[in-house]
Each structure stands twice: as structure tokens, then as C-alpha cells.
Image 1 (cartoon, rainbow, N blue to C red):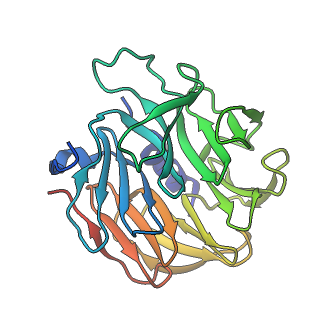
Image 2 (cartoon, rainbow, N blue to C red):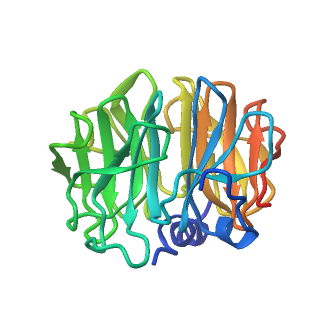
Length: 276
């Protein structure tokens, strides 16, 4: 994917911020920022400009989770029932404009601040257990926490980061998709090595030998060597705004609010969730 397409994905991935049974009006899912799957239930969670929604396993209909209307810009499923997020408070909330790192331990029904309230806005957020990586949209800094987001170290990214993916076997091994192509690190982002200069997009890394990339056109590619080489595998059918993986599948949110899934490594895609 050429650099002009990388810029398009950067705009889609990092831009656009600003009761449990409620159906989701179509316009509320036009600003999807993140996806995550509860591995136990198969429920798909969708983080948006207007709060968190869920499409239960086996259903394409989407419902709001909890009462919050906060703008969840960064989102990651960190473990069973535990989500981490970032973004901006709901209109009228008596909070600073940046939420720092927030956490839910009840599958998104309620949230609490963990750290950096008023000081960080993570538009890229990835986690593996207690390890959390975040890219602060205000400064571009890459931040890493080993204790669930309470204490952070700052790293220098190789370029403006539009997405990150963590090796499922080793959270120290990370691949960054940036404005200048793909880079890899084996020490938690302290040092970086170039992988590809003309590829970029959104990333998902469900298995050690399968790192996936979706570009601005929705073209999906797979790397078996941690991002050095990619081979085309399929087409998601539109411009992606979020990309995620879970056991047994890949998930992509498109700009029109549709979420698709693939159970065959990105070769074919079917609708997983749609606004009501």
C-alpha cells in the first residue's frame, strides 16, 4: 500500500473525535473507533463516539452497554470482563476533556479512571493482560504500562503511529504501522527496526504466525514472519476504521457503521453487526 493510502488510513483511524437494551440508531455507529470480542461468550463490543455497544454472539443487532455516552477513542479487551479505554467524557460531564486511561471490570457497564486523567488521550490502545500500549494523540508519544495502566514509561515511536499489534506470545514484541511504513520492536518499543517502507494500515495479530493488515481500500494481507512480508488474502469490502482479532476470527468496522467478520483468515467476509 502506497503512502497516499497510508495517509487516508491515518485520518480514518485517528480522526473524528470530538440503558442496556437501547437499540443503536444508525448514525451512532458511523463513528466507530474500536472493536473487541469477549472470548468466552463471543459477544462483539463496539467502541464509538457515543459510548459502547454490543452485538451478542449469533446476533447482528446492536445494543448500548450501560448508560455512558462518552467518546471512546481507544479501546481494548484486556481480559475476561475487563476492558480498557480512553477518549473524551460525555457532553455535560464534569470531567477534563481527556479521560486518560479508563477501565471497566463489568464488560463495559461502568467505567473508572485508572491514570492520566486530563493528561492523555489514547487513540491507539492495545493490551495483553496487564501490559498496555497507548499512543497519545496530543503528543504522539508512545506509552507503555506493565501494571494495567497505573504507571507508565514513555517511548519514542519511529514515526507517527496509526496502529500497533502485539505478538500473542510475547507482549514485548510489537509491530507499529506508521506514516513511514511498518516497524518492529522486540523490547517493548525501546528500539525499532524498519520492516516495510511502503505498507501501512490497521493491524491484528491473533496467532504468532499470522499478523494481518487491512489497508485504506479494505484489502487484507497476512504476514507469517512478523511483518517483513505480506501476501494478499482477501477484501473486506470498504474503508476500514477499526480492526481486531479474537480466537476463531477477524473483525473489521467499515466507515458506514457495518462490522464484518471472517472465519477463514480474511479470505471471505460476512456481516457481523449492523446498526438498528
